[in-house]
Image 1 (cartoon, helix red, strand yellow):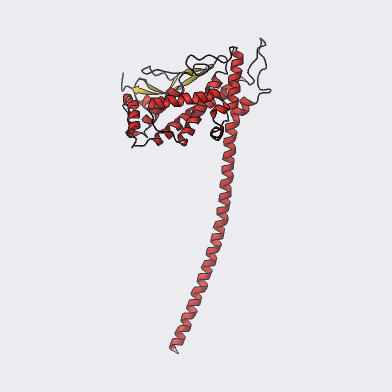
Image 2: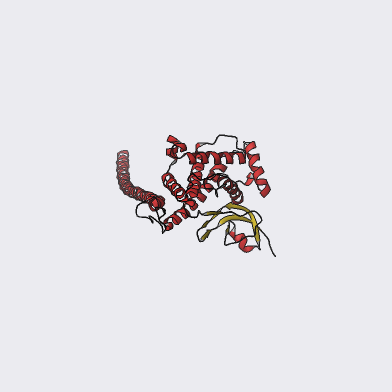
Length: 324
């Protein structure tokens, strides 16, 4: 009898535990259901945010094309002398130029980051070659991710990419395609509009030469110049090629647009050891410049531009003095 009573009590307790467990499971399922609904809402919300971000990015990227590529009714048709003028207003062209300068600077910075990421420490030849380039500045790739090394590499790359920018066809001693200045400016601008949205996927399918023989030659020339400067011996992986294409395209577009102005917009360069002038130069380490005494240019990292009556300052690294 005792054992039967014990078994009944244990059965009742087990049933109670089971009922409690079932209730707990039901509550957990309800909570999971609520969490699932919240998760679905969050995922939907994130998708909406992503969609909005993509639309905002596309709108920003298309701003210059909209302002510079919409030919009809955007600019003056003729000037006072009856000569052909540009199909868009100068204000739109200036705004576009400033935008492309920003894109060019960022793309070169990204190219340098990608390039540094491709350097393998086991590739001693390449490491030695790059260290030789950095040695005059008392730097080495041992601290490859420091700002100083990054800025100096940008300076070396920019020097190659912007070489001969002053020439109308971006070549040493190059001559313009059109001897009529107005026709030449219009041709430069038309090329700008045609290439503004050229993508890497299009280049992979058909090659740069399909879209512009001049741009294709420019890419080959600048890539060869960088490879020679760095004594790079290995083939470039696709990621590095794509990053180079973006930078080269930005600078090519910048040149086309600069020579769409009358007169063309000038590039602003400064040589080593020139006294720092804040009107024409921007110090990359501005905090040091404030805390220390007079400074001189050590190296120009990015060139600047004369944009009509404005100066877009070049970016430099300086040597500093602690006192007079």
